[in-house]
Image (spheres, rainbow, N blue to C red):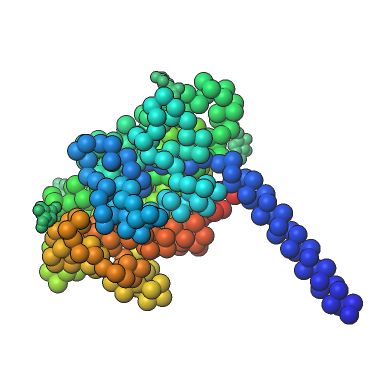
Length: 359
Ligand SMILES: *[C@@H]1O[C@H](CO)[C@@H](O)[C@H](O)[C@H]1NC(C)=O
Ligand SMILES: *[C@@H]1O[C@H](CO)[C@@H](O)[C@H](O)[C@H]1NC(C)=O
Ligand SMILES: *[C@@H]1O[C@H](CO)[C@@H](O)[C@H](O)[C@H]1NC(C)=O
Ligand SMILES: *[C@@H]1O[C@H](CO)[C@@H](O)[C@H](O)[C@H]1NC(C)=O
């Protein structure tokens, strides 16, 4: 009896602790904002406002989004960054910058500046909001914030905000046509050129007040259906994967260096390449049965023709890794986000996003 009571007391005590912990988590989370920069992997609708940019504003894009709305997300539903925003305590994902009223671009919970087709380099992508431009817009935003709230409180706000950056694949794709097979010097030169500019961009964000960075590395870009359909036997392009591997390794090293160089710079690196390889090695474990073909499109691997309202698309979308010829499905984004937010160092380095948010 006494033992039971003791057990019950301990149980209540533990419940109370976890209740209080949840409360403080919620409190910390609700005071946070999320700012997003990059390409189509994190664009939640800016491209809809750019007349000649690549778009995902027609069905069946968004077929699994609430209300089946094609929002501009290059996916059948949500993107990884939507799940990250949720984990940060936001009720809805930060809105596309270009959708906000120009006279009231407040974004108290953050803003999404990402633009499909953009890259680190200004020469990557046409008709898009370049990274340079995205950071310029954020600079104006931060300036207005400082004017409105005062320097101290603006700095404190940005200090605990999360800065999500997902970019680089388009830079690599754009330069892949000129790749000389087996020439690693050439790959290293490409990677170094992109990283130099990327380093400047991350430093700019830091100088504008960003402290917590969630940076996604480039994935197995040689395995996207749009590439595989051109390779004999529909295999992955080892050249492109090798280029991406070098870039993501360089990105991680860059973040390590910035962490040492810049006071208070903290980050979580999401290793998309590692996450992708891990899933490819044991797809069944995660319920995936189709890793090569796109769900939506036409022709070989559903990747010769784009995903348009005329395309056929798969019914079992949770079993497909890819939605269209380059972009993952919501199922894949959700899993990738889960491994980045809560996963081990193998996937999220040196800490996961959850830990970055909590400390
Ligand atoms: C933000 O600042 C810029 C000038 O730096 C100004 O043109 C713009 O109107 C301001 N926006 C808001 C919403 O205050
Ligand atoms: C930023 O946050 C860190 C802890 O995460 C804290 O030590 C530092 O004082 C904060 N700086 C500002 C300006 O709020
Ligand atoms: C490899 O690439 C480098 C740098 O672009 C170039 O100078 C060199 O000639 C290339 N080597 C071969 C064998 O193509
Ligand atoms: C879709 O199909 C209709 C009728 O079959 C055709 O007129 C239209 O050009 C097609 N659109 C695309 C984007 O292929």
